[in-house]
Every structure is written in structure tokens, then in C-alpha cells.
Image (cartoon, rainbow, N blue to C red; front, side):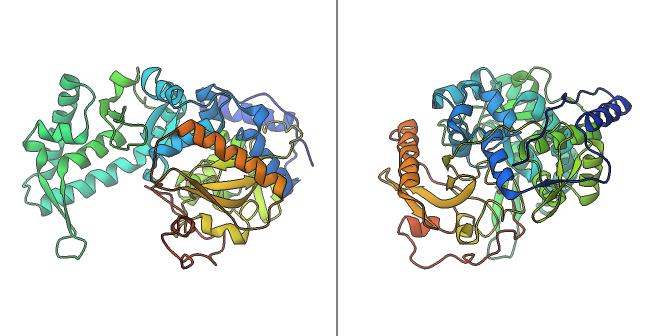
Length: 444
């Protein structure tokens, strides 16, 4: 296994200083232009274990550090945030995660890459906002104005501007509020929008719901505490009242470079396609970010890849197992997954490429799990796993049950195996034979 030397972290406050630091780091690491490091899948799996804190010795109760070590936690399913964090904690605790999210606010929930919800530390959330979230704003405004016009609003842009101010004023007056509470306090905000009229799937939506999305994309609104930790009906809060200084106004190009560098530190080596998919960027923007962050070429078993310029060193990794929730950052870290997702395990994903609850042995997905209505945890193995390793997984399952107690939850984006695992479907899912590198789409 090839181990790499640690070099000084990158620090930059302006474009030229930033690039100079990158050049110095590349030189210090001993990388030469035109010479690629060769990294086998075995080493990639070892990196995954240590850098994603999946080894017992790497567990910590420092929740901001856990989030930083994964760049961000997926939050499309509210359960994921808690279970991904607790899988990496020395003393797993729902209350501790809630304190970080809603009392200390050392973790912030916000829309980001591919319009999905994420949880990250304030500095990383500000990077995400500049590098991904703000890109969503113009499209969402235009789409909402079109819906308003189609629903009979004479001046959609004026209506939307006034509605945004009204929602912010309401939050300042009443504090954290659900979408329902905001709508109930203002008749004007409950403009009905006709979605896909004339279609079999036609629906009606209250306009204030889209106003809340727009305010989030604009960085003026964040999500606070829901009624329960498994609930996704968050209370909305004004950004600057929840996070001092708000989401800031960072330069998108520098934010993209720093975010790409952070991602490579935790998920590298990885391919250009991996980074483009994870960020939801165009190919041109992805290549620009790789150049700006000083990414170093590496040769992978499947082709060319990239390492961070300040690629951390790797210590020897002992055998390990993990029981991870659906949409965990580890299973959702790469577009090209064959090095950790064997073909028989493809059913752990759904048809859109969302990874469901999974069982891991030494860096490979070997099985899936699901919670039944009575709280029983069912497991399924896609391949033969030694009895001793199964016992280790059984121990992790018992730990998981102790974290959640009597709580019952529904996985929002289950894999194709999930229904059969619970006995609610008896035929194979539609993607049993899907190649593991099929283009996935993140859950929204």
C-alpha cells in the first residue's frame, strides 16, 4: 500500500496568493508535472475507512469535526444526519446532535449541491452557498414567476418581491415558524399555484412554499428545529438571526476551489466525473475548480483521477465493519462506484442512484438493512460474509438499536432491496442488473 506524506494545509485570501500556496504545496509533496501516482482500489478503501471515521479508533464526539471530515452530511432524509453522525461518535447521542444543530448552531442546515439539503459547519455552509446554492436562485425565481403568471397574477415579479419581504417581516416578528404557520398568518401569501394543469399528476401548491425556497437560495432564510428529530417539517428562521453574519458573500470561484480541495482531501483520489456529479457543476466549472485547487493527477484502476495538493498521510488500517444509514456521505460520495460497490450489491441503490441503508466490510458494500414497523432490524447479504464478520455487524446493529430506542422511522429514499427485505415485495427490483457506475441523481 502506498502511503503519502502530509504537507502544510492550503491557506489563501486572494487569487494569486491562493495559487502560489498551491504551487508550493505541490512542490513540497514531491509531485512532478506529468507524473501520476498509482493508487489501487485497496488503498482507496483504506482511505475511506480512516478519513470518514469508520474505524473505532477514529470515533469522536466532536460533531463539527465529523461534519468537516465528510465535508457535509446529507439531510434530504432528516434521519441521515443523526445516524451518520452517531455512526462516527465515541458516545452516540441524539441529544448531542440536536444541541449542535439547534443550540450551539455549530452545524447548519441549508440547500446546496444539486438542490439537496446538507448539514455542515458555518464556514463550509458559506462555501457551499457561494459555490452551489446561489446558482439555483435565478432559475427558481423565473420558474416561480411563470407559475404565478399562469395562475392569474398580473405582475409576478412585484408579487414575488413583496411576498419575500412579507415572509422575512413575519419571521422577524414571530420567530422560527413552520411553512404552515407562516401561511396561516397571511392570506396574501396563500396564492394558489396550478402545477401541471390538465395532466394526470396536476396539483395545487401555495405560493409561499416557493417563496421560502427562494429566500433560502438567496441566503436570507435557514431551517431550524422540527418537532421531532425524524421529522422534515422544519421551522424557518431568518438567516442572520440564526447564524451571526449570515451566509456571507464569498467569491464563487475561490469558494469552488476551496470546496473542491476539501472534498478531495476527504474523498480523493477521485475522478473528474465524481467531483462534477457530487458538486452538480458543469464540466467546465469542475475543471476550473480542479485547476484552481491545485489537484494532483493520480492513476486509478478505472482511469485517471485526482488527489488534493495537500493530500493527508494514511496510516495502516485494521479490518472494519459499518452499518450506515441511507444517503450516508460515504455511500453517496462518488459517481463511479465499482471499487466499493460490487455488482451483486447494486440493489442497495434505487433507480435514481440514491444509496439506501447499507452494511460494509473492509470498504465494500456487502449488504443492506431495514427497520420493520415493530422495530426489528432486518439484514440481507449480497455475498458470502464470514461468520466472524457477521457477528461484528450484528454488534453494530445492536448499537444502532440502542441509539434510537423505540423510535420508528421511514427511509425516504430506500434502495431497490428495501421492500423485499421487509417482505412487502417479493420480486426483484428494476435495477438488479444496473451497472454500479450508472449515472445517479441525488435525492432532492
